[in-house]
Amino acid sequence: MDVVLISIVLAVIAGLIFTAVGLISGSDETAVLVPATLIVVLLGAPPEAVFAFFMSAVLSKHLTHAIPTTLMGVPGDTTATPMLDHANFMRRIGLPHIALRKMISGGVVGAFIALPISLAFAVFLSQFGDFFQENSGIIFTLAAVLIGYFSKGRWASIILIIPLALVIQGLNLISTNILGTGLSISFFLGIAIGPMFTDILLASSASGRALIQRQQPNEYKLAPEKKSWSGYFPNPFKVLTKKQTASVGGTSFLASLTFALSPVGMTALMGEIVGSRVKGQYKKSTTSLSTMNGVTESTYIAETIIPLVAFGIPLSPVAIGPAQALFNAPPVFTTEPVHNLHTLMEPMDFLLYGLIGIIVAAVIAYPFSMNFARKATVLVLKHINQEAIIAMFIGVVTLLAFYEGGLVSVTVTFAMAMVGGLLNRFLGVGIGVQFMIFYGSGWIVTALLGM
Image (tube, rainbow, N blue to C red):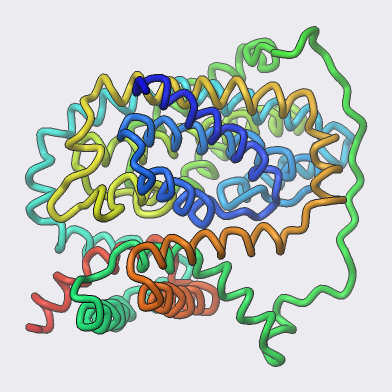
């Protein structure tokens, strides 16, 4: 089958799946995107189709994550958290549907700006690619220190770099002795599901259950939908005012030139900068929401494309999290040596297949969110069990781990999930720090400890 056709088919599948996943409040990007992308890679899809799938998945999820954020006051995922204050204001004045439309329209505009801008910047940075590849071990270790310093568990994250590296290399040594080869997929799957797995452990513990137990169900009041356009496909430029379009365009352009900053941090920063220049709470909230969701899309796209095209190793918060499988999915994609989309695709391939992904996502998720947000929310609240969704992804992770190394690999995955999840929840050692330690653990143990 033609690569373009396969890419379109996989982009449609990603659009449909992650449009639905985005409706589930609190669904973590890393925990859902990593297993899904891994399955596509390991099934033998062409690299171009894998990239189209991922781009469609990211945009679809980040469009529909606006639905629980605006209509229910619950963050659709981590990147939606900075938008809650403005979204709650719009709910209090009875206009959550306006907030929703501004958010997702800003997201669509931001995505289409980010793709060409970040690709052009990546091509410029690619002249430094050899240096980054040759010194990847020390770069990952320094990145772990840097990311750890700016994380919630600042000093704990830094202190635990060497101990966690020893844990990772110890698990890898045991698995190598048993299987005759080291593991990779199992470790970053374990890190990805760590927070989710920790909640399951707490729920099963008499002493820990009180930390996550709720005494009564949450109540949500959904405003009625009011349609202000004709037809099924609204025009995002008519939903946004000219000033809001300019704000989305400018901030998305700037965000497309970054690849080392947290998407959540960039979202909050750009929202505050734009909001501080707008008078009137209604205008401030609607402008901030459209800008922030545009920045969410542009940072995710930029932090995927720039490391992929320029370096071939995951050197951004998105690359070491949700986009992990684009860099490292042995035996198909590897970072040592670099054999992944960086070596298998040309810059124009990234532009073409990236466009396929975001166009398909925009066609599926944007009109769906604009037309059926309230009905979809009611359906999710009444009939979809969040625990069932968690169980589904745990099952997918188990399947992928078993594929890599049988029961040994499954054991390593959940051992890593237990350690990483507890460190994340109780000491603030973020997933990004843990991924950087995983990649730098070999260098840390060899160079610093002489082992």
